[in-house]
Amino acid sequence: MAQYEDLSIDQGTDVVIDIYLLNPDKSIKDLNGYSVAAKLAPSYNASDSDKVEFSASVKEPFDAGIISLSLSSAQTDALGTRKRYVYDVEITHNDGVQDVIERVMEGKITVTPSVT
Image (cartoon, rainbow, N blue to C red; front, side):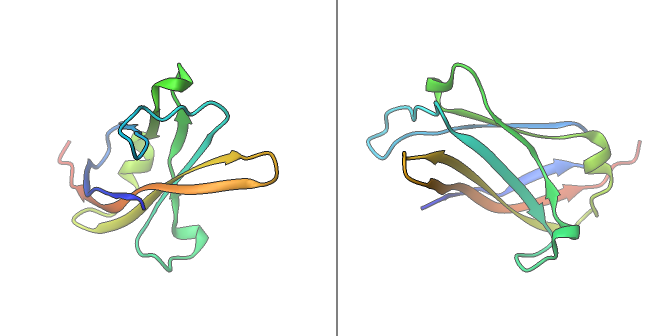
């Protein structure tokens, strides 16, 4: 089951979010061979054209269990302010037979307006 976390993003800024993953036994998750995908949208049933994709990657060393998500200032500037978005983060690896997808984080994002 994914961890639930609400986030706040400042409009017009570069955003970097690091996520530290643990196994159920609280040991650090080894992310060798994993890929990451993350998106935010105005609602769960939003069309693909309304979704914003994070730049997402596993940080080295891969056995440190850290995922990095980022949005550029242009991406956050285009987001509506005082509006809530939903997001999720998924990791994928191949178990030798097929791709296995696991949702590791989800929640809501609030965008705070910028004056400058």
